Length: 190
Image 1 (cartoon, rainbow, N blue to C red):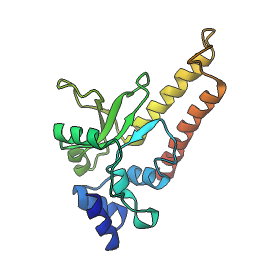
Image 2 (spheres, rainbow, N blue to C red):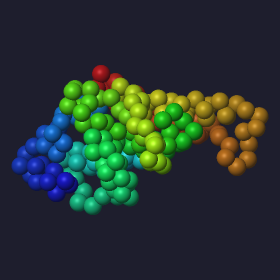
Image 3 (tube, helix red, strand yellow):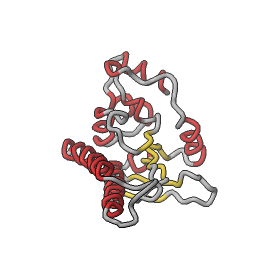
Image 4 (spheres, rainbow, N blue to C red):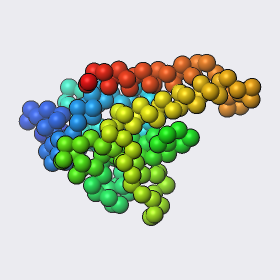
């Protein structure tokens, strides 16, 4: 799909047109706002998937990479399980809201004009349910990061917060920075 996306960019298509050609649905503005911010440069505690993010990179930004990263096999597993899911990101901190889950769009929801995101546990046991978690990817990510920030802020004040695994004020400030970056993107598309 990466090679096809690159050829579409060479024909002059925009990221929105390329993703529509690849998936046959229109993606919400939030996806392009995050892609423009460059998921890697956002430095969030989130593992972004290869698709659709790397397909949304126009040629001046380097274009879609021909080789996926380590998330590829996980993305294939999700696709094999439910081809209606478009994996977006793995929320790493399993102690936080939606943590340990892969957050996805559903093609059927996108085709109906809804940006609802769904989550599935990373473990992918046969009985795991795919469940809706938020109205949008940014709102799910914001809730996840805000929960991390709140937990760390609370831990900072505990008498037991010392030694290995303790939280310091710099960590709490870093978590607030994650929330701030997501809120800046939300304001930009509002």
